Image 1 (spheres, rainbow, N blue to C red):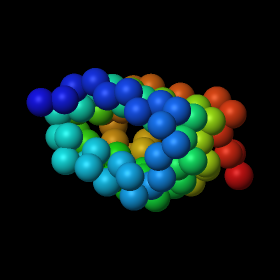
Image 2 (cartoon, one colour):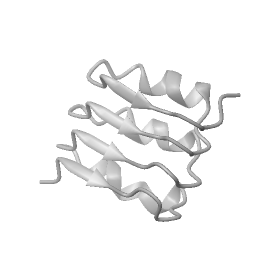
Image 3 (cartoon, one colour):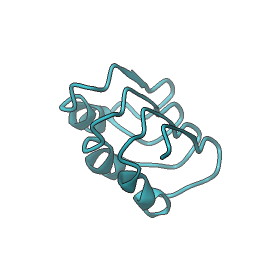
Image 4 (tube, one colour):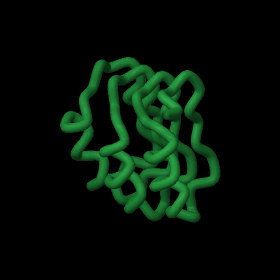
Length: 85
């Protein structure tokens, strides 16, 4: 069971992280410094144990952040230097 996963700076695309939605017990996820877009947010929002996700320096926009905020278990979303439009 994976509860903390660091995939930062691995140059991963949206499809590269499809497996993350299968990590149902994940609590902390670091995805910063990857060219990821809003489409990953639909996968992440289903993770019931996710508490913190780092999206710094990604292409996730405010629209993606709004999707993630639907998961009330997520307490921290880091999105410094991410796309905000």
